[in-house]
Length: 140
Image (cartoon, rainbow, N blue to C red; front, side, top):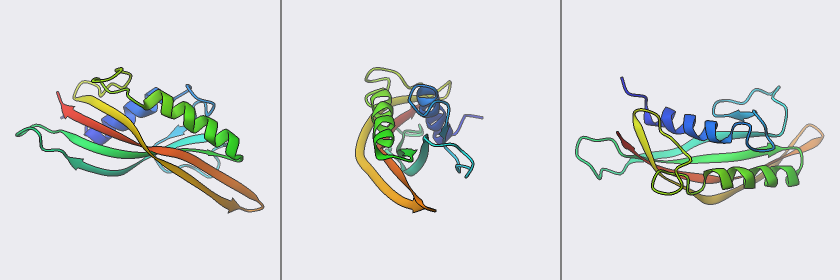
């Protein structure tokens, strides 16, 4: 059975970011445990759709939120910038840094909108800085 395209995309994004930013290996695409040390990167699927360019062939398009979470805004901004540089224009039709594995082509990966949030946790403030990543795929 083919790998679900969401799983293929998340795996590709995680592999591209892991140990490549100041967040180190703290890259998560599932619920982040309270015990995970900051800074870290978190990836969540925001939306998804089928583009329907092909008959009987999957061609999903996803929008992922990619956020750097840190105890200071400078660290969050730095990690978010590092992540954006690693992911923007990395589809097969661009620079080719993202692989969808044996079942999927990742055709395009484009950094879109900006994400900025801060909130209190206890007596400190947590900063989230990031972006949305549009990923267009096609079944192999």
